[in-house]
Image 1 (spheres, rainbow, N blue to C red):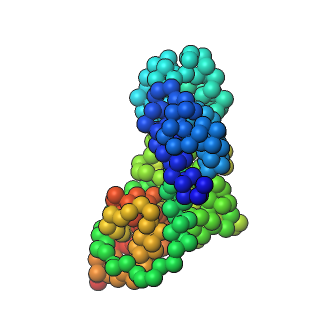
Image 2: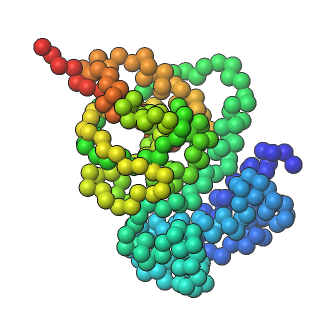
Image 3: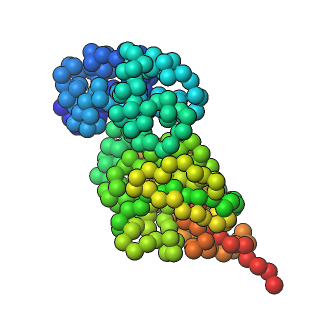
Length: 303
């Protein structure tokens, strides 16, 4: 069996799980979606996701249930039944074991928890296939939209690495589950971001690249183990946004926007670069909106 066939088969199983997460799911149904025998489907699923199909389903149901409890405040019994747990007691035991807090208490307090938000295996392997392919010619440069936005004084919940200078090094150092934790924070001002910290925010022995989420100054909820809460002053950010692209091309899109940022004359907008004012940041690459990255700037004072 070609590796690409296995990747596409597991991707179809992942899509089936997401579409039927509120229904009973059997291995036979997953095998039908994959197009292989139940035994072979279970084997390749474990190989490519690191989890058995039913461990994966359980974790997805618990994570989806947690988001409902966080955002909607429903009754625990309703959530348990909606996500195919036999009894509220069984759901409560599973939730508490996984997240270290009961669903009722989580609904009331909504502390950050480690959600299970896996990527589709096809997205990851498309990147590997893209890296294996030699680029024979550069893509035609696209339009880049530029604007300046203001960020208020705020707190930043972040997790540091050791030496990481970019995303892949960071994942190797701390794992790729940080985003799921940050996505659980109810009080977030904006979506989670990857950041390159200014020098004064990098303690000795920690990484320049980190992941975090910006929060109101009055944030006082739980700080997860291994994370840190710092304050950031008001600042101006110059945001660069590329055109929509195919998701599998995200690596080249990032490089193209970063090249544009390095060459861009910020003085055209009446601003100068201010790398120590705030972290430079990137949003999660999503093809439908174009890649987005931002740098700190200051307005040029005219004398």
